Length: 172
Image 1 (cartoon, rainbow, N blue to C red):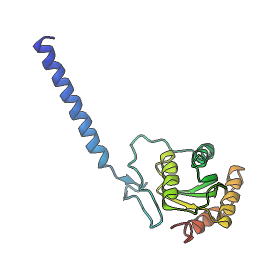
Image 2 (cartoon, one colour; image 1 turned 90 degrees about the vertical axis):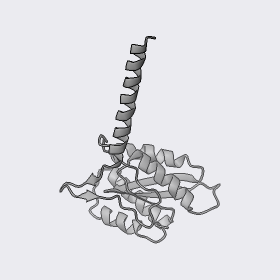
Image 3 (cartoon, helix red, strand yellow; image 1 turned 45 degrees about the vertical axis):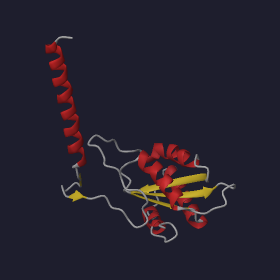
């Protein structure tokens, strides 16, 4: 290879490296803005277990109506979980789980983190993931999910979700 070609190649590689670095630096400085142009820092509540990841400028909204079952299937692959259901409102996901018969433990931070990771991987716009295994709450989540899946819009669904999310047993 001639010296001229080596020089051109070295310059091209250096330019590419600088472009990549500049892109990485800019991506980290983006803030989320609402429809009024105000910036919003990601909210993390005491019970949320995973910080949201930075979102890219080109991100398509996750369709929970058609994608919910796939996310639930991923959660159900966890050895402790037999069944899960997810309902969402805004940037909050509420996950009700039924433990596998073989699992003799209870809800742990590790399980919450695993489930939150699966949900937020599917939809990075989710900022709060609440997880519960309390039978009464799981039954309510199942009923809400069935209503939403069937197209019936329950006007109290958002209020019911919010009540369960704020339940002390859900947000450990």
